[in-house]
Amino acid sequence: MISLTEAQIVEWLSPILWPFLRVLAVFTAAPIFSSRSLPLRAKVGLAFLIAYAAQASMPNQPVISINGPRALGAVIQQVGIGLAIGFTVRLVFGAFELAGQVIGFQMGLGFAAFFDPSTSAQSSAMGRFYANMASLLFVALNGHLMVIMAVIQSFVAFPVDQNFLQALSAMKLYDLGADLIASAFWISLPVVA
Image 1 (tube, rainbow, N blue to C red):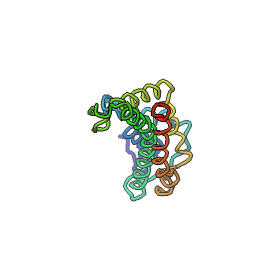
Image 2: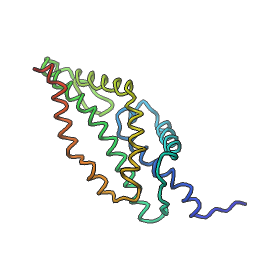
Image 3: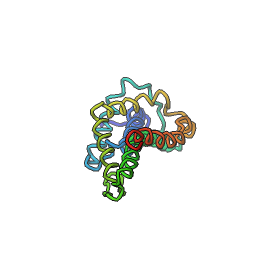
Image 4: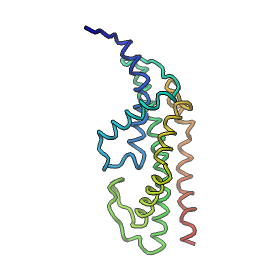
């Protein structure tokens, strides 16, 4: 009979667990990956395969006991960093959708609103059109691969042992909101003016 100690199991799981959690968090927030048409099992399986395949290019992951407070902090850190990366990608799509809404209002199409299943809210026809075009352009330019590459490279910039709040403050998320509105108006300016 094979007997394994907790230390051996944790040593085997650590290299895959932290990247898996971060990639899964990105899949929860990033626009193309968080689509409701993609089944949950496929998202989990794809996140596991990406985390497993990326082991060779990542730095060694620390071995953290899974039943201690450091493990909870590491889980929160990985999910927080993954969500921050995913929401950053979503901000780019938000700029295109906001630009489409501004253009739609200028064209007199502000009354034509549709239910958007991806955000569970109302959005204008031009806003949806610009968001769909941004999605197609994102996939055509291999943006989905760039997001996966950014997640893998984020382990160099934000390692697992680093302080969680320090990692999030380094991303300066408050600047991204201002950039969203500025980008939306720059995109819509040629049509509005």
